[in-house]
Figure 1 (cartoon, one colour):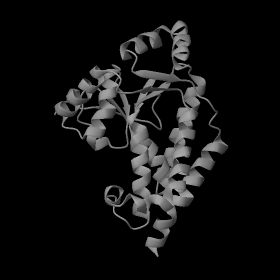
Figure 2: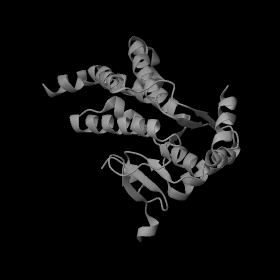
Figure 3: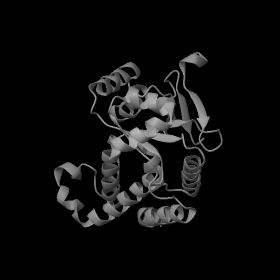
Length: 61
Length: 183
């Protein structure tokens, strides 16, 4: 699957072709699978920081 | 030290981004652990910049070594231990104490994966012995910690020179690279 992906890209773009040739099979290329919307970014930060900040709040009291 | 023997520092929030940007794990760690509003807002802005560049420039990609996944797992586990007043050595001496936090670690790891899903990327693994050689050369030439050498050596292996890290101090002595940081 990934190889096909790489091949597809190689035929389109010469500089990426050279780039992947240099990497000699150690690389896997992937296009974005889902759009990172502003809403999603805000949600990611809100989710992680809700759980990360608990200690900070407790320790400052 | 002459200007040619140190890295060229570039601002990741302002300067035009390069075609290929190799990233250190600490960028993703910072997104998860940003513990002050300024850092959080810088991380958010940076992520939106990467997203916009990915959408507008079909040649733009981020590159990294697959060790990034392992480092995120370790960082998230350590974070939970620290948050609950335990030493990170518990991971080795008494790993059962991590059990109550598995769901949280998994959830945070999923968020990291969600960030990666939105980006065009090239993931480089140690399938090639030449990469290991390059990592060791990087570590010994520049006296780096092995984790830093993994990321930087991977970029050298790909023959690129744009490296993004929040640890400016660790990399600013490396000649010939463009060091992308947030300040």
